[in-house]
Length: 149
Image 1 (spheres, rainbow, N blue to C red):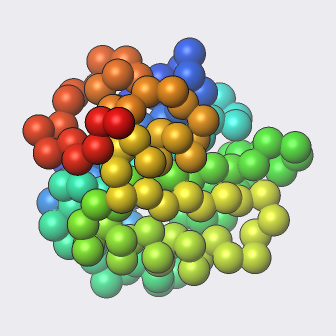
Image 2: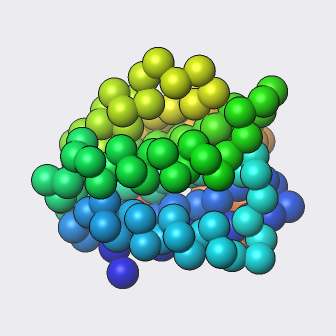
């Protein structure tokens, strides 16, 4: 499955893994499963790992993306807690995906999109002391983890 998620409830974090060809349809399917998950909570930050994404569908930037955004916005708080979408984007494809998200969420006051090229960088942006995703919990260790400072 191209888009999967793991909720790290004790950290208030949702780890989203994008692999292969990623489409908004797959993203919507994963998001519906996330909303139905018993560990879903408002205010959870989303760490989107695009390192293994090989391509993304033409439907990124389409009405399907805007529908997903609307559903995400409805499900998330609009108070003092921001909706945080943190993109780990070490590749050109990942960076394109992150730029599409930045553009799509631009001007939405409660949404914050972060983009980092190393695990350590994005974890620091999220305020976590860990330097690798694998250190957060039982996430798999990436063979290509670039920065372990």
